[in-house]
Structure formats: structure tokens, C-alpha cells
Length: 228
Length: 399
Image (cartoon, rainbow over all chains, first blue to last red; front, side, top):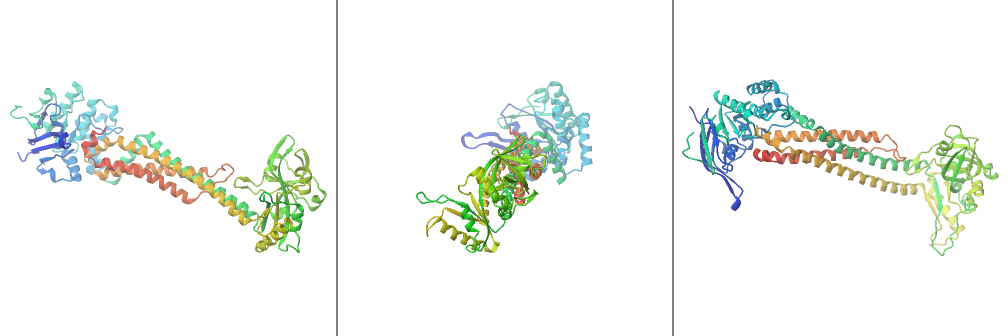
């Protein structure tokens, strides 16, 4: 195995200043190896969402080092972080975050458009991603014409269409019923089985059970000595 | 990332919410159209005033009575004054001086009745002085004046009101219940700003004084100078004669007023200029209100879509791509609305509005279009650029 995909050292994130400052992360260390399947668990306010947002380059840490695929993200500007999000990261949100009034296919194509992929190839790859999540027959439906589970599967298709180094999922089953949750977790399992690195946040033990490894975050740090 | 992709996003953004796009377009359209149209109306009014006054000729002086200070013995303008002004020895620069008695009168023919705003009694020279041409029949003659015949020449508006289908020449009309024979119809002169120059009827002075106004004062004396070059000489001679006849001493205010067409033009132009400024300010307000409406919709549009901006950034959109998309959306709406507004303005200008034929001022088209487009662009792009600067997570959390 070569260098880890994610290497986080002494990561800190503080919101606000002075007396009202909230320390979401207080010196967190984490290493995720290539091909890993990691579940992050923790109580509300433990900082796990903040961690995942920083891992996804949606937010920047107050201090600490974050190496993504061996690259130190602190040296990156706004534009380069955009490229990083586009090429290396696939992010799945709890609330799906599809663009409304836009077809499933167009939503999945979106990262490829910003990556500068040509139309024909884009269409082909987006359809392949939709086929992978079993929604190629719903390609021209709009988000409001799809069920929650279907919307989340479209969001997963969008996350993996650029063939990213890691797929990050923030409570991907949080808004879904049991049946849809199983579908979504099945897809993530298959992604990991085909070699993709997957990191997800969850509250639910049976979702965490899909992962190879579980990390608990308590008060902005990784709790020590908890077996997977 | 190519420009065509950004354009495609923008088109999709505009068409995604058709009602909102249509309302934005409508706001810009109304603002632009009202500015173009209202300024065109003001401009049309002032142009028609200038044309109608210029049509009167440049060698005409109008003398009208003016109330002098209380206590002084103001004399009225009389027919004798007019005769004295026409004296070739005393006033060699004057070609003719027509006494004018004018009143309003109700004319009736068959069962149609019409109120003529200017019923004028004068002499035949009046027609050449005021550049009035006859369209049908003939003008009345010096003999008609001497005999006091009840004949009348009517303006085009009066002719169409009283005789919608038949020829008026030779017909009899009742003016304030006194029968007059129509001998001719004047050629149309069109509206002079707020007044219809064709809403008139002209009869011999003797007849009008006898039948309608009485032998009192004249409302005007219209003087024609021998040429446009002698107009100031004629004005001096007229003033000398009238001062003598009315016993206006040196330094006293005269009980009459002599106006040349040039002075009349200046006075009327000032009036219509005020009118134009008034209309332009109304138009400016409507553009402002339209602009605020557009601003509002643009702000709402962008605020509502900050989350979408967050999603786009999360999947790797650059700030430039997002800005470009919103800028293009705003441009499309502004341009489309502006073009529709220009079209509506031009269409509206083809109709006569309150008796005025609008004349479009090209600079107003440009101004209205530019202002509305800039409002749309600024308020479409400014909030978008602020949103594009947010970190993706901040934009995503926005509700």
C-alpha cells in the first residue's frame, strides 16, 4: 500500500472568537488508507460533520495539516480547492443537494461540465454512473419526481462520476426509510468492494456495521481505544 | 469549462422559473417603454407647436389688449385702430391689419350640434396673413364684409363634426340660433400642441359683431408686414400709431401688447418644454420603480439560489463560472425586457395620444435601454458575486 489517501494531523476548527468561540475540533488526528471503508460516529455537536466538511474541502480548518492524496491542502487557494473538490472528492449530503428543476442526468453531469469534459463523453459517463446506482431509467426525471432514496442514489452517482479518490458521505441514510437506506448502503458497499475509498458519518450502528472500521469522535477528538 | 456550457446553464436558469423570468422581463419592458413613449409625446407636442407657429409665417404681428394698471384709462382695441394701422403713409411697412373678434359659439346642422372653440370675425386679409388655404368652396369676400352677409368659412374639424358624410359648401348652419351659409372649408392645419387649430370658423367681422359679439372691443389685430425683413420696422410703426391713438405717454405701460411670431414661438416653446420635462420626470420615476422591481426580483432570485451556488461550488465550479452564469442570466432578462420595451415604445408611438402624435427621441431609447440593462446587470451580478465568494459550506447552509 502506498501513501494514505487522507492524513490529518492536529486538526482544529474554531467558530467565532472570544467568549463565544466554539471549538468544534480540538486537535484531531486521522489516517485513512486507500481502499478503506470508514464510518465516523459520534454524538451531535461532537465535530464529526465539521471534520467531514474539511475532508471534503467545503470548509477550511483553523489550524492543523490535512494531506489529501499526499497534497497539503493548506497551500491551496480557492480556485485550486475547487479543482480538488472536482477531481479528488465525491461528496454525498444528508439532504441530497440536487439542483432543483434539473434532470437527474444533468445533475450527474454537473461535475464533468466543470471539469471540462466534452458533451458526448459526459453523457456516456453520467449514464454509466446512473446505471451503477440503478437509475438509468430515471435519467430524465427531475428531483421532485423522484423518491428520497432515488434522489440520494442520483447524488451518489454525481459523487462518483468523476472517479474521485474518496467518496465522503454525511449521514447518507439520515433522511431515508429502512428500505432506501439498504439500497444506498448496498451501493456504497459495492463502491468500496471495487476499490473506492469511502468515509461516512452515521448515527446508526447497523449502518456503521457496513464499514470495515469505525472511528468515534468525542469533543472534537478521535476517542482512543474503541475497537471497530 | 467552455463558454457554451455557462451559456447553457444560464438559459436553463432563465427557463427553469418561467413566471419569475416573465415578471422580471415585464418590469424592465414597462420601464423602458414608458420612458420612450412619454418623452416621445412631449417631443411630439413641442414639434407640432413649432410647426403650427412656423406655418403662420414670420412676417406677422399679433396685437392683443392688455389690462393697464388700475386708475389709468385703458382703451380697447377697435376697428378704427385696425384701419389706422393699415394706413400706407403712417405705416408703410404694414401690408394689412385685420381686426379679429373671436368668441366661442355653438353651431348646429340638422340634428347635430357642435361647440366651436374659436368663432372668428375678421376681414378677408386675415386668410393670407394666417396662411389659411381653402380646401372646398371659397373664402368670403370684401363685399360680404361690407354687406354684413351671414356667410362662414369653417375649419376642418368643424366640417367633419357637422357634416360627417356630405359636403358642407352651400349648406346652412345655425350659429347660436342664427343661420349662416357655409361658403368654404379651410384646409387642415393640425393640432398646435394642446389646441386644435382646425376647431375654428371664420366669418365677416361686421356679421360677427352684429350677430354674436356686439360692437365692443376686438380680441386681436393681426398685422402682416410687407416682408419678414421689415417686421421690426412694422412693429415700431404699429407701436407709434397705437401709442398716439391710445394716448400712452412716455414711460407708461401700454394697454396693448405686440407680439411677433418669433416671440410667440419662444413663449410657446417654453410652455411645451415644461410639459416635456414634466413627462420626462414621470417617465424617470416609472423607470426607477421598474428598476426597483427588477432589483427586487434579481435579489430574490440570487438569494433563493445561494444553495444552488453552494452545490455548484461543492462539485468544483469556479467562481468565474458561477458569476458568468448569473451575469448571463441577468443579461438575457435585461436585454430581452429592454428590447420588448423598445418595441412597445415604438408601437405605442404609432398611435395619437391625447391629440398628440409622439415623435421618438433616439437618445431616450438609448438611455432607457442602457439604464434598465445596467440595473438588471448590477443587481443580478452583485449578489451572485457575493454568494460565489462564500465557502461552499456557508452557501450550502444558507436557508
